Image 1 (tube, rainbow, N blue to C red):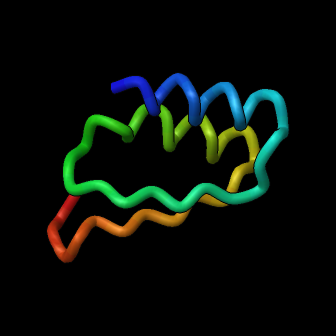
Image 2: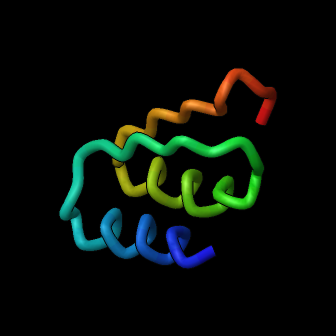
Image 3: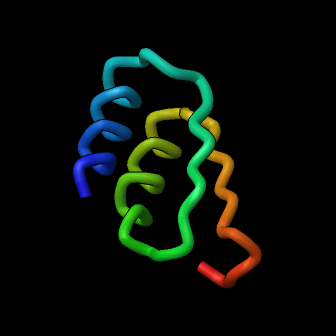
Length: 51
């Protein structure tokens, strides 16, 4: 799960305003929560499944 640290890094460095994540598992929840706390808008497309 290399993308989790990338999400956190981008968020803490204020390099993004919005992240769009396409995933169908819950591995990214901690990174998403962190990014949201840092003020990043997070849009999740769970591929029509409950995540």
